[in-house]
Image 1 (cartoon, one colour):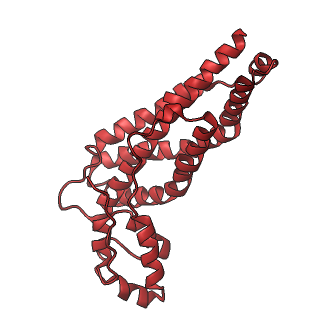
Image 2 (cartoon, helix red, strand yellow; image 1 turned 180 degrees about the vertical axis):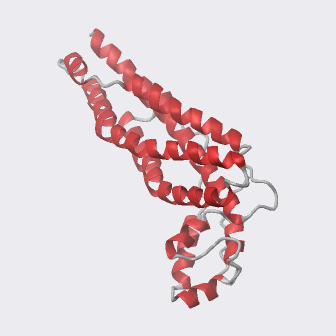
Image 3 (cartoon, rainbow, N blue to C red; image 1 turned 90 degrees about the vertical axis):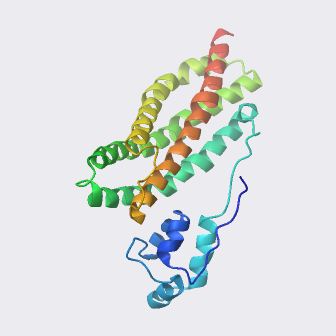
Length: 249
């Protein structure tokens, strides 16, 4: 599959642009432009009526829909651990802080409209709300406690510091407990959300809001899945192995 840019036609209906790429909804929300089923007006007319620069909106739409994909040959396991932490912070933590407010709002609107019609939506919202409430405090714990500790262990290990064993005994953090408790909750929640949404596949002929919500949840699921792999599969196991080696020296 080749990557291709979405063509943003300033005379296209707002609804059609959202159908073309759900990520445009984030931009429309930023400018206060209605993008659900009733928004059947050309983008240029909407911007003119609202006194908004259509060129500025189109520029933001192009940024939001830009094609991007990581090459599958990237070997995260060989990355320097400081660089891996920086990648997690600047890609996955930044994504969650930037995107969660919009996803929260969209899920809330979607549930308010469809919970009474679709019984599974009530549980979906409850599962999502619980996940969302835990994510930001978990990011903060990683940023303020776990990652600084891992950096200290990595540097002490690399430099063969004579005090390294004492450092581990003094500063040791419950990485294994954190991984098992918080990350298992995330994985269990994602598994249940996939089940409730048929892997985020909306039924045919549903409204735009329904499609946007499922697309955003799929995007979040994909990000968290890679996020967890980088931490549980690479970063923390390597740090724990260094801990063990330093304690045995």
